[in-house]
Image (cartoon, rainbow, N blue to C red):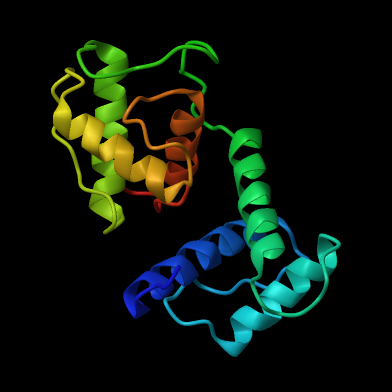
Length: 170
């Protein structure tokens, strides 16, 4: 498959974002801010990741390295959840639902949208409407989760992790 330069930059920024999050929790990996360009510093961080996680040390992101970084990132999302208000592992919120939990979801999506340019803020209505579903889909795509528009436990955990990145004094 051939990618445009914009698509390549988007994929580079995505994987470097995951690597950044991993590096915040794993001191063996140097912290490199995500960008659309694969810099020399990014190569150093990738080499450190490969060495730490038992991969061939090339400094390049091949399929095995991509899969390992995304898998480590997903595992990390499931480990640390600061907002333990989601009812149960099998519970889901979806279009047509309403109530306080939907309001909380919308409030968190709104806050995230105000701080991260790749998320659109939603209006807090208490109704799981099409705007809420669209914002959830954006979040799922960013977090490399199945894009369903339904808020499940993994989607909630991804949003909770994102909220940890918002500076105090929001």
